Amino acid sequence: DYKMTGEVSASLSNLNHSFPDPKLGHDLLMALTKHMVLDAMTDKDTKKMTRALPTEFRNKLTSYTRRSSELLRHFFALRHVIDTEKKLKKLSGKSNSSSSKSSEKLKKIVAGMEGVYREMEGMRKELPQTELGEQMRKMCLPIMEQLDCAFQLNRDSSGSGFVTVED
Image (tube, one colour):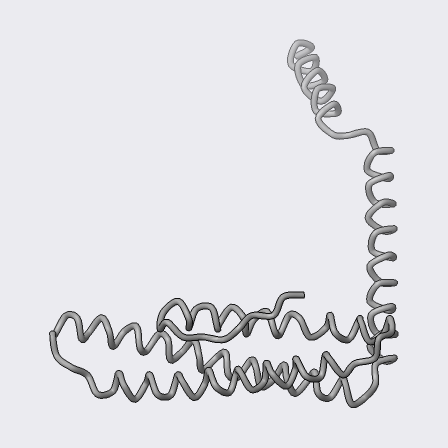
């Protein structure tokens, strides 16, 4: 019995060393709490900065985001349709008129994306040369970069495309 109790005691003693020092756990929780507070400040700062943006800019940026998202959604869906049609055409060896219809639709979608891109480019050029203007210019870049990627894909697959922005 004593031997069993001694083994259990030794086993529990080894188990205690399996866990970190409670001070380490406390320090970790304090660091995480501090990090969460800083993140909360960042959210507050972001909201504050967003509220400082001119309403017209916010509305335009929202519109460009929605328009580009919808155009990109159609772009990638049509690319998938065209790729599938090309595979079927290759397998069957027949000409496919729906393929040309899809290609025409894709050209219209790309033209729409180019229009959004040009509008955004024009808006960026018109923004004031201030710190706020620079922030607003940077806010446009993610949308423009997404469009650039689609233009690159289109250029790579069809030999045409659109000029990319370098900033």
